[in-house]
Image 1 (cartoon, helix red, strand yellow):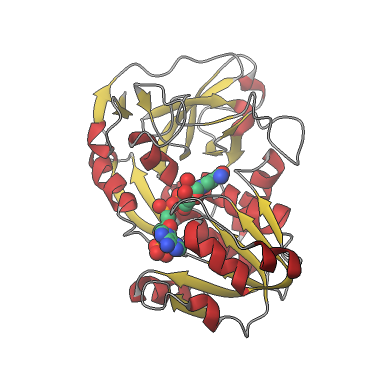
Image 2 (tube, protein in one colour):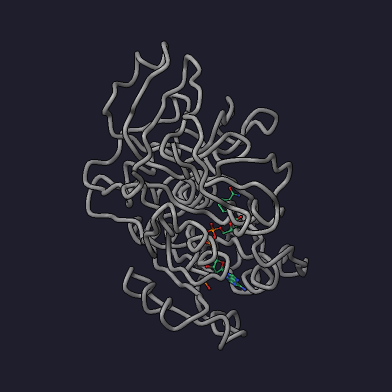
Length: 336
Ligand SMILES: NC(=O)c1ccc[n+]([C@@H]2O[C@H](COP(=O)([O-])OP(=O)(O)OC[C@H]3O[C@@H](n4cnc5c(N)ncnc54)[C@H](OP(=O)(O)O)[C@@H]3O)[C@@H](O)[C@H]2O)c1
């Protein structure tokens, strides 16, 4: 089979298409023929050596959707060849729904070979039926980002109908899901982004107020008259400090990343305003099942662009330069 593999640390240029054997199957595993996959910033960070314990060579890719090809002996009780599935990339979350078991859990696509390949082997318990209304590309766009967004907004953020949510850097893969899910839950949404074009796209997805964090670096001051109940952030750095300024007394801030870097926070507004800052990462199997239920109707993920697997390096560059709005997807359809 063909796979997009990372051979050395040094950025996306170190990726290349290899012809390798299909992965071996354990009894509880299923071999999935990947029809589409999608990128996350995690994949870019791994190529740059910005992720702990990178083991090489490796097939990257956490997101994927495809058809069941072969089942291990026990996996065959749950799945049949031809079943259309979406892959939950959170491997072995552990018994506590409140927090993953760090000692045993991992994410598909390093160290375990991932979805940027014609076939991927995953535990049968990580497969879910593909929502029938979605295309392969739409289904593949959901897993890691949709899961993270769902848990951040609902499981951790406890978003309620009618509340106001601030979504900084809305062009990111996870943040577009935060916007979509918040709107679907009946929330008012305020977003920031780096370009007028992305702000326009966010408005088209239902953003009620959209501010440019480049041309309006004091956006947080402009939001002081707003009643922001919840902030969901992955930028960190200065954005988190500004979000603390903007959130209402008694509000919540959920953090799942630090793209810009670590943050230094003023403590006075934190304790004086009784703000809760909550961390979150990925999501439990229950969270994943809940995400897919959201796609039973007209809701669709925001897809930025679809690249062929052979153009995977260009897809990585698009994410690395933050040109995207929503998910960057790889199609496997053109692979011979
Ligand atoms: N803990 C977890 O489980 C988990 C899960 C998923 C992701 N993450 C982390 O979350 C981050 C985002 O991941 P992703 O895959 O969604 O990445 P992505 O699609 O590459 O999005 C990154 C976005 O960051 C935004 N950004 C950059 N500088 C910013 C700034 N100064 N202020 C506000 N926004 C800024 C940009 O938004 P605009 O385009 O709107 O300007 C950009 O699109 C990464 O750090 C990733 O490692 C963590």
